[in-house]
Image (cartoon, rainbow, N blue to C red; front, top):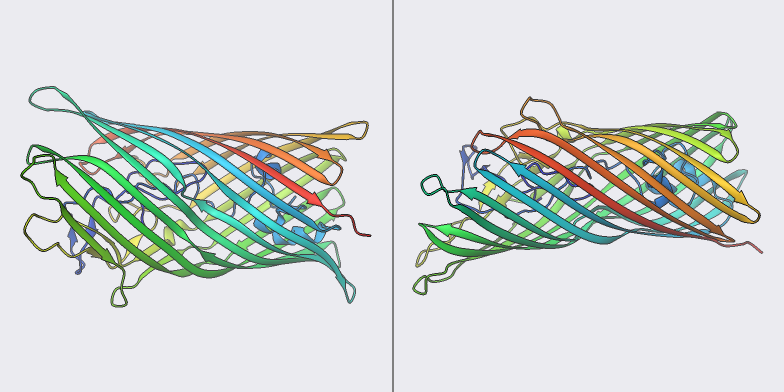
Amino acid sequence: MPLPVRVRPVLVSAALLCATSSVTGQTTQPSTPPQIGQDELDLQAQANVVLGSGARALGMGGAFLARADDATAASWNPAGLSYLRLPEISFVYSGNRLNSIDVASTTRTDDERHGHNPDFFAVAYPFEFGGWSGAAQVSFQRQIAFGAERTIDETSVDAETGERISRPSEVRSAGGYDVIALATGVVLRGHFRVGATVNRWFNGYHQTLDRDTVRVGTPGHTTQTSDYDLAGWNVNLGLMWSPREELNLGLVYKTAFTGDVALSRSRVDSLLADTSPTTTNQANSDLEHPVTLKIPAAVGAGVSWRPRSRMTLSADYTRTFWSKGEIRNFFVLARAEPNRPAPPPAISPSLPYPTLDLRQAQHDTVQLRGGVEFVFILGRLKWPVRAGAFGDRQYVQAANGTAPQFFGLTVGTGLVLGPVLLDVAYMRETGDYNAIDTEKTRKAISVHSSRVIGSVIYRFNRR
């Protein structure tokens, strides 16, 4: 899939990476095609596939694996569906913004993006059957969102004249990795609850990149498009145990899977000189070199404690095994030369995903999350307030050989109006670290990301 080698993180998810600086060709020998970045997506800070949806959960820092007890439960821990006593329908929408700055000795890159996407929709229905009680749910979740408008301004200093040269880019993308899930959770004896979901992964993204270029000292322009569709299946397993009424322990495991990818690319390049013709190159994935993507397994564990009926304290640990992530037969396109056949795509038999960088280790992502909720009761009005914090270890490698660590804070609130639950949350994540770029020079990267999430849950009264 398309990913960036540029190590700019994005919260909110998310997205994938910037273009690889080196890929391998049809052989296993490395090559560097004369390409311009074709995949200006970012996955950093969105790589936690254990993270679910909903403003209530994310307002508590995303520490919800042991407390999932509403219509968003299947996206966190399907065992929590067993808490439902009334039919529920839920909808979640989110918007995000990311600003990042890369500064090296002679270059500076300012990257800004913003987008908004539907995040989650579910219908859940409780049941009792043969002494078993629980609930079943069908849901849609945008696991990783790609829809965004993005501007990238790359500024460099000419070594001879000292003149500052700016090369702006615009990236427009739509879509995301979507999941349709069938889930159930039931209550067992001994205060145990178990649950499972069967997930169908589908969709992907469409992206258009417009960038100014310079070739042989002459200004030019490139327009590149990518269409990427993923299809695959996996399973989530969840467990909850309540050794005491006020204490919950939760465990989640999400299986790895290898999905099929349909990838098509095209690029149009031109110089601004009137005598220079426009050139085109395009390619599609094929049966001889099928593109496949391995999404790794993930695990999570959580604890939730209610010292008072109106207060909840929660903490989670999650790990996604991105060190085992891999994409096979990924390809990029080189610029076609005037009056010559377009060069074939440069294909890599195997690359780590999502970095696409064979030169550096790809790390597992790890998150530690904690949060609190307190509900004020004012007559018939229930007013919850929430706060949380989290640490977010990335999959990329910093200059010192370790994975950089980002930190975030969350706040949230809500309102209960009869059968309607309205919630909103705000998340802010930041990170600073040094990286090594493709020229082996050190650069400083600073990232600031924010996200707003709104949720609506409606509970139907049984008659």
